[in-house]
Length: 405
Image 1 (spheres, rainbow, N blue to C red):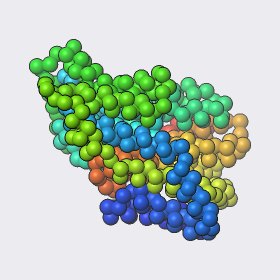
Image 2 (image 1 turned 90 degrees about the vertical axis):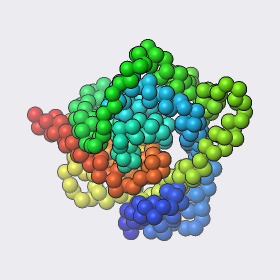
Image 3 (image 1 turned 30 degrees about the vertical axis):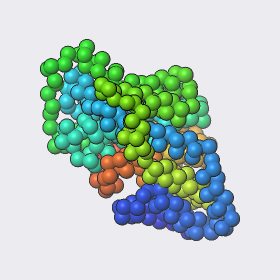
Image 4 (image 1 turned 120 degrees about the horizontal axis):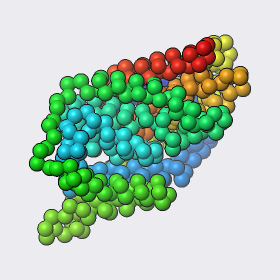
């Protein structure tokens, strides 16, 4: 019954969001459904809620999401995003490469919900290409996350390497072909109907590069502070917000007036509610012990170990909306069962957990991007079907060749 409650909760989240309820409230209601199916006491449920609300993780995520969404709003209002797009068009042209590059670069910042930083930029460039909001949502999510299996600093990759003893280089090499296949397919399917924009001949490449650097100075500052100096991320984003607020000032404009015209309208508390819903959902899920029960029951099915590991990683990724959590749940259970040649199974589990994480309706990046573009889950999943299918199909072929040849 507890496992049935999880899938009922996921269905309920999608249903309520399609009825225009804020996803955070939908997830809190879903958490109560899980609590009921798992027969948790009122006291234990209340403890899980308190743990979520008063946790350092929630405070950090809430501040980060609040500041990042504010940054995007300010950069749009000051004209920084317009300059960035014009500069990139002069450097890259107005085709698919432009829209692909934006979330790919921002994706180097592997923080929860980081896709909200690239969403306004994808929107600015995507509209010029005539893309629909579902396409822009899929592009922002797909090209932010597809590079993760071959990104040496990706936490989930480092976790797999640490737990299995297999070098991250080896995992990257095996993941490279599935990633490239998915990128090629995604580049074809996600841009259906896009128009072509010619390069702006009036702006030379040097001027275009200068314009891009100037327009993206708040973002580059955040990346430098967070990745190089290891500064507390919400503080790094706050500094980026200050830089954006005092950039692109008009002649005679009072900088402090922007607090009223840009800061107050740009604060989006609905996204904080979304983060709260995710934290409550995860805490109740953990307190219910439903995932450990799911692992045990799947082991009892007697399916081939590769298929079992794949399904387990995919399901745990879908349920948790976290790649590292999915791997942390799945790998310790399956590692003792993989024998002397674990690499094919590790590859399957790694890529399946990534797919579950990216497609999860409780994935923070997806929730915030969907909220930004105000699009439907159905259109998003439909667009990502073929890139996801070919990524997994290629992974299965590689795993099969490693296992039997």
